[in-house]
Image (cartoon, rainbow, N blue to C red; front, top):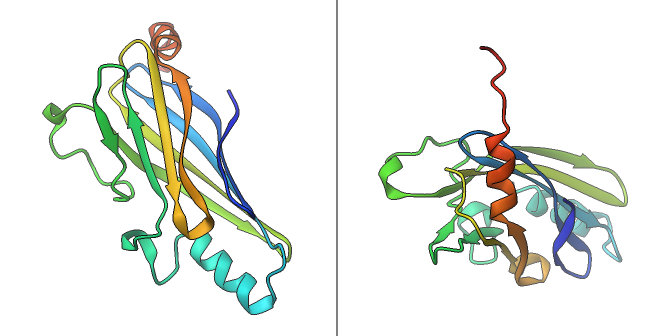
Length: 161
């Protein structure tokens, strides 16, 4: 699967693929930034903010936000606690960033990150939602087939027997 989730004037956020495991799904995300008409100073500042190292950081109102609406009506939100363990698995589904990185040059910048959805989603459509006001992306969404993900999970083979 590969689909654009959200687009701003100089930013594209896309779901590049999904890796299905027996107990959850890793959603591989690509974020693309182009320089556009920014001068050198503005370009450096945009790269810093885009990579998540800006002053607004993970707590600013204009920050990058992820969410998912499950077919059973549950809504979950990624809390930007990179790599933090799930504190109470009885709370149901969780969505969190588990890895990321990127870089760029004088005209474009690319970030790749993974969102971990745990446990496996229910059957039916899932809405992956992104919002990033700092880069002109209002609430945008893409539909992922939860049934297809569950079917793939049923075929997962362990690495070691």
